Image (cartoon, helix red, strand yellow):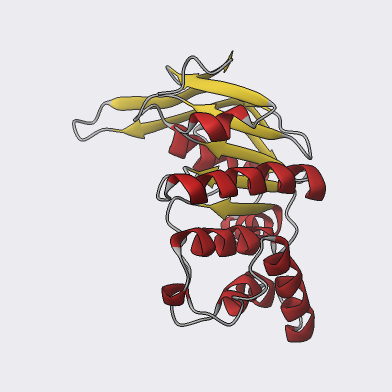
Length: 227
């Protein structure tokens, strides 16, 4: 998935800031990988590069068998939309649409017919425990319900990879734990690879692997680097 990835930014003084410095990472279907590390270590940048929101400065990122560096921007957007689902700390749901319509959105944008998109969205909302809340808009949902809707939306196009950036960071303990259980179950049941950036020990502990991002590189850890 990622091989020898470097990501370098230019600072305000014109100097180079090396955020990622030779990252290697392969995630299997059904595997949950937690990435931990200090604030500012580059964890969010790593997810952006893995999800083709940012191109690496050097090295290779492969999504669904396609090297990100080999495709033009328009093709890259299409590849990203069908190959990666994103879950962020804040749900980013469209407030004027219901939960069902929000989950349908990526499918409709991908050209899926409305009846099939609706059926798929219903299936996913039932799976995340929102069968009674499908017609509610985000403002009528609790924080936990909003985030579960965002998870369903990320899964809508059946991508092989889900990237989650502090997904429970804005939730209370009870809702966070429910989301952690859901993530682990979905990775196993749906056969998706899941990379989650988190400071939450409970969520990290559910992963098959915990990796520490430090000095631009990933290191295997048993959780002692979680801060």
